[in-house]
Each structure stands twice: as C-alpha cells, then as structure tokens.
Amino acid sequence: EVQLVQSGAEVKKPGESLKISCKGSGYSFTSYWIGWVRQMPGKGLEWMGIIYPGDSDTRYSPSFQGQVTISADKSISTAYLQWSSLKASDTAMYYCVRITMVRGAHFDYWGQGTLVTVSS
Amino acid sequence: DIQMTQSPSSLSASVGDRVTITCRASQGISNYLAWYQQKPGKVPKLLIYAASTLQSGVPSRFSGSGSGTDFTLTISSLQPEDVATYYCQKYNSAGFTFGPGTKVDIK
Image (cartoon, rainbow over all chains, first blue to last red; front, side, top):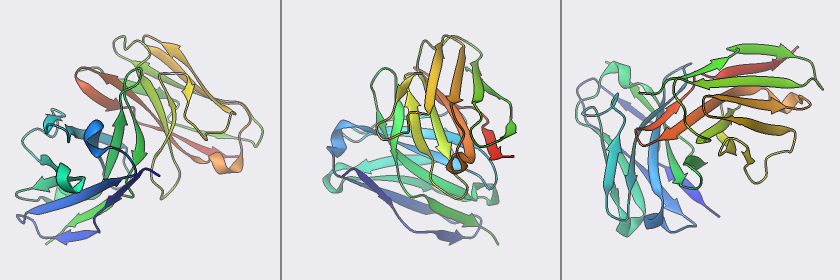
C-alpha cells in the first residue's frame, strides 16, 4: 500500500527556521517525483515545487522560488520542505504528494498534511 | 504562465441532480488536466487524470471531458457524500497550476 506519512504539526515564531518531512513507503521512492502543496487557511491549493529523489532534480513554482528549499534523502525514503526564516504568512497546511507521470502528470497519493502555524 | 479558471465558484444542487463544473486554461494544455475532490477538513483526492481517465476506486458517477482549453467535470447523480470543493489542475513543462476551486453543496 502506497503511503506518504508527514511529520506533525508545528508552532513557530516569525524568523525561526523549520524543516518538515514526508516519508514514502509501499513503492519505489526513487522512481516517482514528490511534490509539495500549500493550502492557506480557507484558501485553495498551490503547487510549491517538486523533487525527483532518484537524482535530487528539483523544480520550484515561480511563486515559491527562493522562499523554501525542497530536498530528499533517498536512503530513508524521505522528502523535506524547509524554511530558513518563517513569516506569519507561511501559516498553512502543507501536503506532500506522489506524482505519476502518465499522460501528463497528476498527484495520485497525498500525505495527511502538516499544519504549520507561525505566530509571535 | 498558464492560468486556470473554474465556473461556477460555488453551486447548490439536489440529491440526484446532474452537476457540471467547467475549467478553462488560458492556453492549450492538450489533455494534461486532472480533477481533485477535497471534502471539508480532509485531504484532497485525485478523481480524474488525463482529462477523462477515472482514478481507480472513484465512483463511475464522476466523469471528465475536454481537451485544449476547455474541460468539464460531471457528477451524473449528486450524492450527499459529494459535498466538497473540486479543483482542476493543469500540467505542462512550466509545472502545475490549480484552478480556484468550485464548492458543491446540497440544496
């Protein structure tokens, strides 16, 4: 069974750093792209970026380039999303997704989400 | 970049009604279009990919059509468990973009 299990909720202060994780299981982790999706409170879905754990090829949405860093450790089947200096506007639910490249590309499996709250 | 729009932004329909949601891309995207369902407080779920291919396990009352710039998601007979927000999403070499969502509830 394919599963993406994300790290738990975080409460941080503005200016702090943060790294959240997403562990894949039940499939070949190095053979599928992993993506990150943001959902701000009461808002829609936004694609942030993707990584191919096989070779760490990473692509960012222009909206998030320079704002976050996506990485992966294929030895432990885990992808990461990190911030060096959080802002209140980073408060959101963050989902990791597995991407299947068949006739285009789509997000076929989703993690349970990690709620990040940034508040002074 | 390619922009995605959806209409309507919300709708209310009766159980058993046929419901259609439209998604439009600002440029042609072939059939690289997926639909997702997000029930209140839940994780989004893939319904349809490649514009018209039903994801495994999704009820057959859901269907998708379209190509190029205009796409539709149809629920043939609305059920109470279909209350959700529906998002379209495009894929191209520049990446992924979601539509703003269509909220569906029961009248």
